[in-house]
Length: 334
Image 1 (cartoon, rainbow, N blue to C red):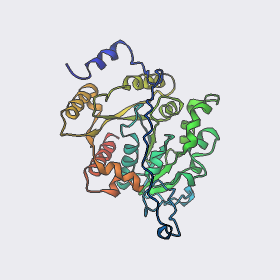
Image 2: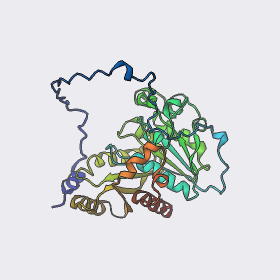
Image 3: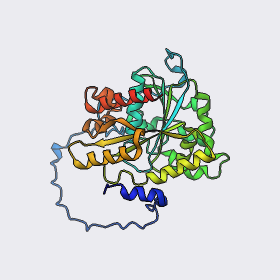
Image 4: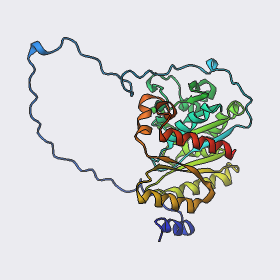
């Protein structure tokens, strides 16, 4: 019996209900532990100055990228064909969505493609992962969705080679509630992206880990979906709900929407579980699964703290090579 056999049965019977928000969460409160009093430092040994702590989320010595306007963008050196809008989506968190969004976009840019990455996750991991300090931003994708700011006014050009970014800040956290009362709320992102078609080869959307209005906006705006799935036991948990949402949007709002590819992430070939999950996912989704598998590596986790993609942080490492191979597959799939 395969580890996803029950998933197959549920697929044919009824969609898996997402009950993660319904149950109450019990919080264990630990008893306070008395700490030993700190040893007093003699007055003459106390330095007469204190170094200020950096407010940057990055390590000391990491240079932040300048926040420029779209008018300062470097000229495009090739003819742009049909723009492909691809949402990177999975309602389950921690599966490598932002890591994939940043590193796939950067790898395609280094191959000469014009790429725009839209950070639609209130956590803003793609924004900080590309070296943009969020507290220095005056506008973000929130203003595009709620204040009708043109997308071009929010784009930060050339955050990496041939890669532009639409950043996100914590302001986006309130967008889910505020969009409820807006007219044409599901089409806000699609309408904003429209004028940018023909200016980029690829537009990627880094989606939040939920199925709220922000994700619905992504489904309506996108032509195709890339679904990262981690090679762990609960890999397909919630995917049924995502596929049901995709089907509803496809039937009612976006007939062209379809799966572009399933991406296996966080793979550890040393474990039987990873190998078994990868085999089960390939058996379930067939040719929709990319040949490239993203390994679990420390370097992929470290690169965001330096504000650069893995192809710059560790260009010869397994993570960089995997995302370069993935970029080649994306180009081959058209």
